[in-house]
Image 1 (cartoon, one colour):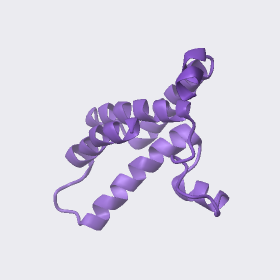
Image 2 (cartoon, one colour):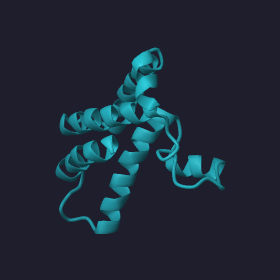
Image 3 (cartoon, one colour):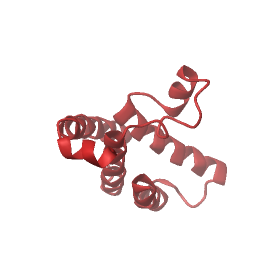
Image 4 (cartoon, one colour):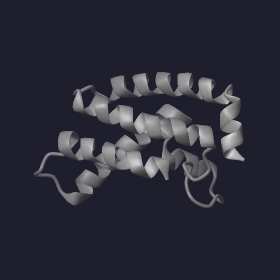
Length: 120
């Protein structure tokens, strides 16, 4: 639920900044998918396709199988990536920053006992 709320912030930044008005819906879809995979790589270390290839029998996608901590970090990354997109940072630089942030946040959350109570 949290990631769906921030998803709008993220997609609006993509729409407003990265998608020229002259491209097709299919081309725009590719841009959205590329940005989703940028977040996937920053957090999970792999694209959605790589995860699906490694888990052919799994229901859903890697986000459906994410831990609570990963979902919290994902919502943060969506918001931050929206800011970075609007600042005009190129994708490789955004990926580097987002991965660094994901690592830092995961360390913090995994050592926080309160999040374990929230999960149960």
